[in-house]
Image (cartoon, rainbow, N blue to C red; front, side):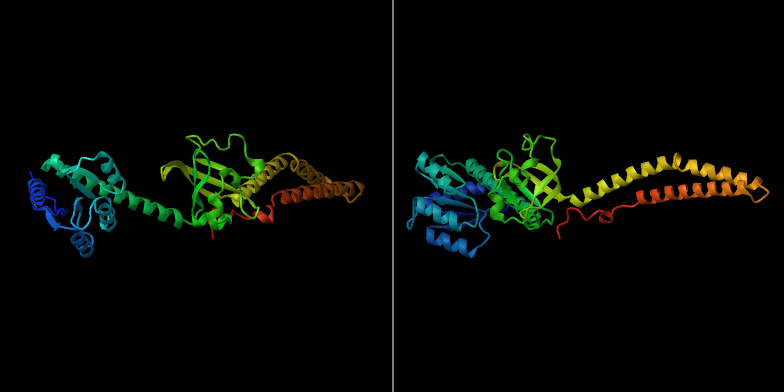
Length: 339
């Protein structure tokens, strides 16, 4: 059954017989093709300039009255608005065919071997190829926007050499390097020299999350959490990485760990040291209750009671001191947000 899709096709052909044959082939395979016809380069240029977005595909004869060969190919490809260009020629020149493909032609078909099926297959193949390329270009555009507009520092590095391939504006702003400087740097240069183990650059399959030290341009060393994944970047094996500054967060965690240690000490003090003076006080209170006269014994007992009370007060003060958190660590900072 004929293809019911509507394909607009520009045929650039000065030979009436060849044009009629190509038109017949198209009508055999496509139910309602939209056919545009130009007999020379001048007419083809006018059609392409006045019908932007059309045609879907171009069938080009290489021998026109006003232009031929490679100059014709170059000019048609330049004004084709990314429509695939299929060359139809009577010359079986392999070297020229390869050359034309390198100039941006999508396919190269010999007129003597042309059939409705071979022509249709070439048209459909190249239309699908154009669609895939367009989708890929749109995907790359979306990636670029997500990458460069992200407020989080992000960078891409070559998996084999560890050279930087790209860095977003968030990275440039936060680390202080210019884009030109970053693209001349290696990932090792982002690390303090004393902080790079021999295996640092061996990124394995599971090493997509790391915490390490990074060096900003001003010499400040920050602790970062890097989340990294494999990508193909412009044909190179690479990793895309998000770097989140966790310096303040880790400081706060250390402060909390230190405080927890103090709390463990307090627990031990409460279960051991506090019990001694408290037990003495409780015992002395019972003794005082049984003393009926004010005398030396009562005075001595009260002295013991005061001594135990002071001892208990000192223990309580030491507990209070241990519960204090350094003022510099009242809470975690907003880690990783570049402001």
